[in-house]
Length: 128
Image 1 (spheres, rainbow, N blue to C red):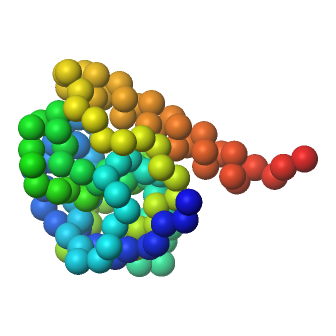
Image 2: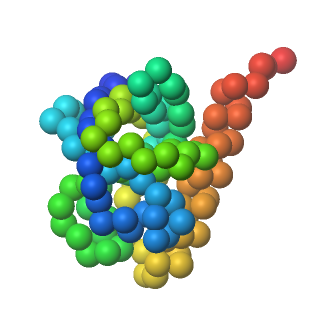
Image 3: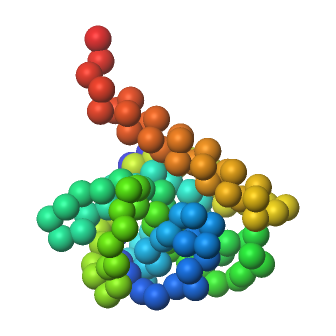
């Protein structure tokens, strides 16, 4: 399935992703986004392209109810508050679910990252 690119501005979040070892850029957007879930995404920041995990949902493990759009950019450490990102979801990884513990969530996030990086590796390598 093809997903549309959407634009969002990086806003201050509650730093939950950072505490879990997966810092995220929280996004504010008025544009249409894909349904809730976890995705591999291509991220454009100014003239650079990155890849990462996109989460669209309410973060049920933390019993929150407000929709949040956040992206963890692989191998990225810069501070980018108030900057615009263009996000293109490339691949749906899984639906958002409530985990029984923070540890279980962290384990799943690691699996999600492995799934995303394997997908990227497969689409980048030439086929025989």
